[in-house]
Length: 354
Image (cartoon, rainbow, N blue to C red; front, side, top):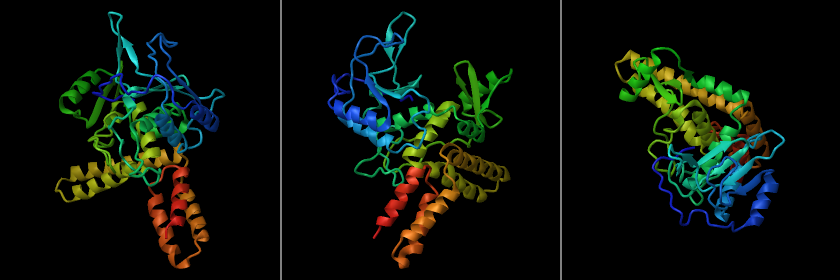
């Protein structure tokens, strides 16, 4: 994950020693993960590894995220996933000098690295809340938490359900003589003549249909004007961002993939252009497929699961005068849930309502 225009200083950015090693061990035991930190010198790949350690507040944020994850999110291999606290990611210039990058996090070979750039930032969904995910105004989502879940999206990106999600999105790897011209056209106009946006990723070029990947994005407390800009940079990052939004802010993801596209169809129907109406309907249906595929194929949550929970809720509601209204409210909110954990939280909350 990458944050643009992040200035990183050394003061107050993680401390020189961890201030709660007992909590580190507790998290490791509870979730079967390994917590480490850079201790100075150079890492195993030869990059600078400035001394930094996990702070208690960061550990608490990490634990809150891990408690919200679906099964399999921490990997399925025999080796335990490692969460490593690092100052920054580096690249080596041509003159041999190591330069800090603005990366917020990274994942590679079983290690999720969290950098200073993710601590205290206000980009993407930092500051947002979610009833389904359990983040309220007193304890909204923090930047490091969204970075963690984004990188976990890369941990699970090799699954069959993820491949089906990519197919539903409609990303296309581009080849041929016309690609360079369409890439230049995209950079100049924002979209090529074939209504596709072409993006270069190293030596590869991918494209997607303009209007079928969100722009801007809904908020419930955050302020970032476009929470989808990094997602649109390439297929892997689009999945990781959707994965993060699904776990942390499912209501906002539903707004961006379901509600907003449907609203654009209604707006298009009020205009005289039949072409605009057809495009709006095509975009709405394409984004609805993304939502449905992510929910069913990646998180394995179905309408049958919602119905089963609805029946269980009705059976447990002792006040029959409230039962129909309670179950109706549950179904309406459950339509925006992405994980079984969110569904269980919603059911428990509904039972506690006066």
